Length: 190
Image (cartoon, rainbow, N blue to C red; front, side):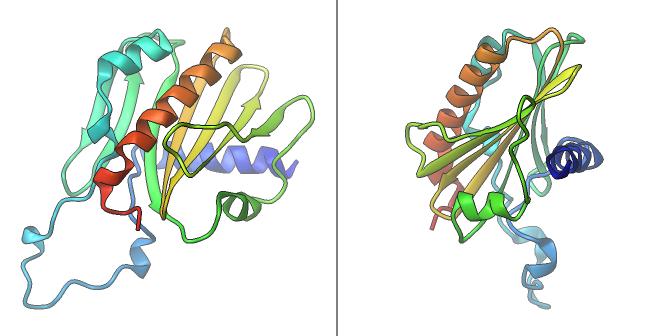
């Protein structure tokens, strides 16, 4: 039951933010800008889409996408399917000083026999990775965590039935490798 709440909470959070939250850290914890400093001169936030191209993502998921990148100050990384029934792909990030195992423990129980599994794939270029796979009667929801130093990139996939679970997981792992390969461009890994 707690796992259902976790997946529902993750998906609700994702949908509530317009499938587009790219955050460095908790905004409340961010230091206030200097009073004399021009906020417009601050460097733009990093976008995990900076290392992804729509054509390879389209090939991975056998879908056609429009890409939502947001703005330099409010980046998003969403691949919205142009055809109903194709998987939705969204990437966001945060920094986290603990391990992925510690991060996932904050969610509570994660495994639910016959429905939800946590997988620890070996992702080339990543320090660590996890996939939470949740299959309901009508949707396969996959959340992937890719760790490079302090940077944790979060991949969210939603694929309605009929879906090919094995193909979707292979595509997720490949995309996670692409995210890991681009992690150093963030400046957030250390």
